[in-house]
Image 1: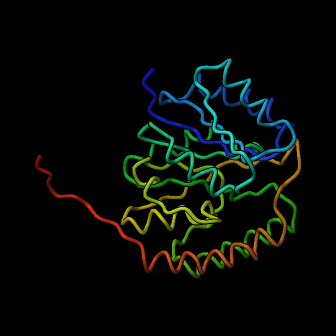
Image 2: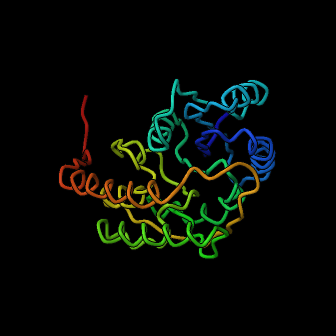
Image 3: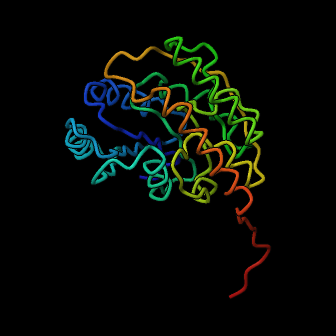
Length: 238
């Protein structure tokens, strides 16, 4: 089966969210404008998520999975998925379903013209503390990256796989995807999407990993930006 689009879903201790996640993904695959498949990456969950994912993927041919031996972080989960993806386009969705897969259809019309298209959760359904820390983190990242994206941490994005594979791996990778595409001299676009409250499970984010961690990652990005190597081949013989 020739797929065109891979939906990547990093998972870490989301056993309560998985039944609804599987239901939403299956429904979207039936109506998607591109022939799509799903790649679930379990990031060393300890709550049974890995077993549930593996069982589901065995029973549904459009679903595949990568199961880590321990928790490495969302950046590692995304990088592994980028390297494993075989379709020309890939997307990224969080397992908590605060963004829904059908909103990929809001982004897909723009992907031919841009290297990355990202969602913007303009009307956030989060707690006040979470909104403030996220807004502060975005402001800090914009200061360092100049990507001018309102919501760079939005967990709904589409990229060309060839560009995604060129992104170097580092902790906090997910926060710098627009900036890393800009380093490849590709344009990016932001599209307003829907945002929903978390229904199952608990958020894995707090002030430390939503603000202090990203602040440290910004210095890593600055070093990568100065050292980043990119090239295009004009011609090839033999």
